[in-house]
Length: 298
Image 1 (tube, rainbow, N blue to C red):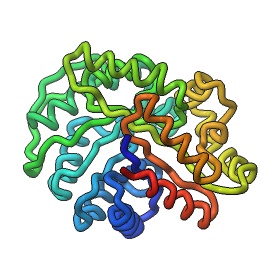
Image 2 (image 1 turned 120 degrees about the vertical axis):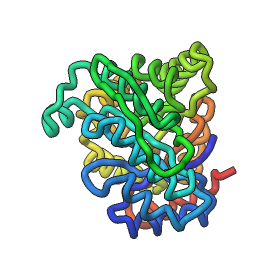
Image 3 (image 1 turned 60 degrees about the horizontal axis):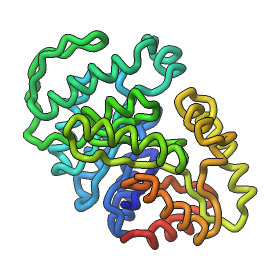
Image 4 (image 1 turned 90 degrees about the vertical axis):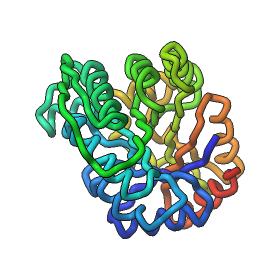
C-alpha cells in the first residue's frame, strides 16, 4: 500500500512549496481538492511544472459544471505541461451543491456519470467521440497538446457508482469511508466489476483525516467542528452509517504515532492500494503527523 498526501493548499505558490516538500520527503503522489478556492487543474499546471518526480491528482473535480469535452481538453493540457504525471479524479459532487448552488438536476447521477465517463475516457484516449447519451451528449474532436491519457479516478462510494467505475475507470478515491466498509463493500464491488469487464484491478485510494497527538479528546473535538459538513452530505453520511459511526470525528485517525501507524497499516488488508493522509491539528501535531507518514513510506 502506498502512502500519499492530501493537502488543502490555498495558492499555487503554497501548493508548489508543498509539492517540493513532499517530493523531498519521499512521497510519490499528492492529491489536491477542487472545492471553492483555487482551480485544481490550473494550479497543478502552474505549480507542478517545475517539481518533477511526483504525481499529482485532483480529488476531485465535480463533473456537472464542466462538460467532459472541456474537462478532457483541460486535463490533457495539464498532462502535457507536467510531463504525464497527472491523475484525474472526478466525481458527481452532492445534491445540495449541484441543485442548490449550480441549478442542475441531480435526479439521475448514475446515468450522468455513465455518459460522462464514456465521453471523457474516449476523448482522453482517442481525442474524438460520438456519444448521444441519456444524460450527457458528446460529439466532436479535440486537438490538445500531445500527452498520454491520465488515469481516471472516480469518487465512487455507493454500489452502482463503484460498479460503473470498475467497468470504465482506473480506480476510486474515497473519503469518510471506514475500514469495514472498504473491506466488505468498496474493494469487492469495484474489483469484481473490473474483473467482469476484463480490466486490470483498479486502484483504491482511501483518504482519511489524520492527527498524531497526545491530546485525543481535543483532536476529536477539532475534527467534529472542522469536518462537520461531511456528516451532513448524503453520500458521506451513508458511508458513516454503513460503518456504524456517528460523525467525521469517529472516522478520523487520531492517536499517538504507534496507534496511528497501526490503523493506517491495517487498511492494506482492506484492499486499499493507496492511503492519502490529510493532516489536521495544531502545527506541532501536523508536523508529528507528517513524520509518522514519512516513517511508513516503503
